[in-house]
Image 1 (cartoon, rainbow, N blue to C red):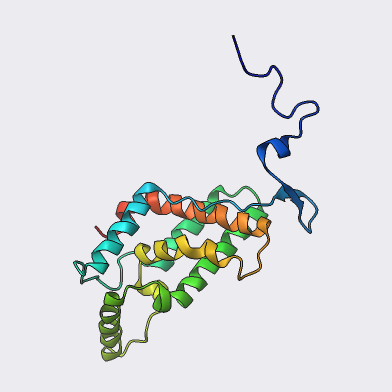
Image 2 (image 1 turned 180 degrees about the vertical axis):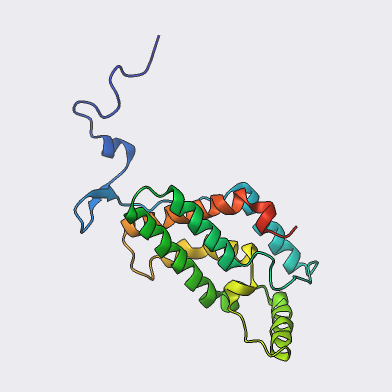
Length: 196
């Protein structure tokens, strides 16, 4: 009646890795790790947001954005860091969280003006920066101006940069797991961080 084998897959003479199509490689640290990196998991609500936002900007139906954002990127990353730090079990995990948050912060500041903005957003940014200069205020960093919308745009493209950084699979998986936590955090706080 039951067509399933009586012993678990891979028991005895079966080669589980060969059956499942998973190859293992040795990392320089010694332990065996999968040779494929994890995938970035973008919750459906955030995917929908990205698509809707792109359609609005390209159709030029969205022409205004209030700058600076109520909850800028640096605050979002600080909230995320604090939340994950309280859950992190050991010092090594806490260190990884802090490194990833710092990396996201740094990459955001470097990438924002060049590749995270739609062309119709640039005049809005220029107006904001001119107002800052007229008020004799120094120009704030992108992390102080922009919010979750631009952070989301960057995070979904970060895995594409891993090859250029020569990261091994283990390092990629650590970063991807933290980025997945960041995605879940953005999704859970959608109404708080994203303008409707």
